Image (cartoon, rainbow, N blue to C red):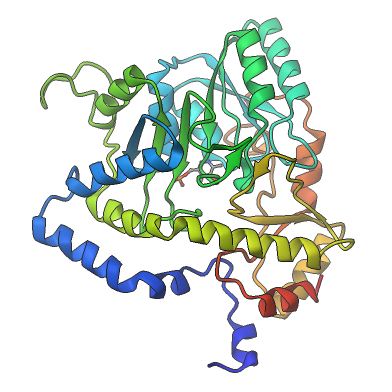
Length: 373
Ligand SMILES: *Cc1c(COP(=O)(O)O)cnc(C)c1O
């Protein structure tokens, strides 16, 4: 047992080491198995992982792929997104949501978010759609983001999408393992995309991602796009695609991690509940509406005096990060794209602060962290 001082001097923001030590033997065996069978891309682990992910997400199909960003691109390829099409995305998210749209030559249209859930604001979405139409843009779809692991309000979003004849692709990069009205993330939109970047709730030991769908036609197109728009045989190319496969070693690692994922989700919920109680009355925490279960990818609070608090936390070796400091619509690479007014996004960019979050965070450490807030 290390003494308390050592524990407090090396607090990880996300503790992948403890998780690894829990399943190290199984992971080693799984990797050695890949080395033995010698198939590094579409080996047996990839197919097995896709089947197990479908069971977890409650969908008929899962397409594993090279990253969460590629998952978004592949899903939009299935929807035949074309240059000039407009796609609504929140202004308060990780850059990849808008980047995937822009890489296809389409136009990300930025929408403001809700001050309590931090997810896309339905009122503002409706406003954005009417602005887009007035500007003679060609709106085709909406990409809600389940920020920090909390599902967006899919019922409201689907209602708007239906009225306006738009598709919905869920950016569930941070929320795989969460639920919305008893339905698992993965099954909340026609196409849902997640990421297996190591720091996400279900992380590989490298990059990876997946698209979940019940639509066989979409699945066929994405399977083709994942390998350069392959047709009936390997060297027939019927559409544009990419090198989008998940590699076999990552699939092997993910299969082992998936076995303990439900247990880790429970642990994440215990940790977040403890934070909520310790921080009650001190700072505002992300609001989780009734019927929603977050997977707590990131634990984020709103604070008034962020610079000062960050300094204090740093002085006491408590890691903390600002997700995200700049509205996407104000980033250099995106400032020429259309946007509604985004007062809430701007407020959040100035106030949010994320604290250490992972399934293995102890009560003792949480009390230590919260004593400085
Ligand atoms: C991480 C993330 C992505 C992209 O995933 P990668 O696997 O890093 O490409 C997309 N959207 C959101 C909201 C994310 O957090």
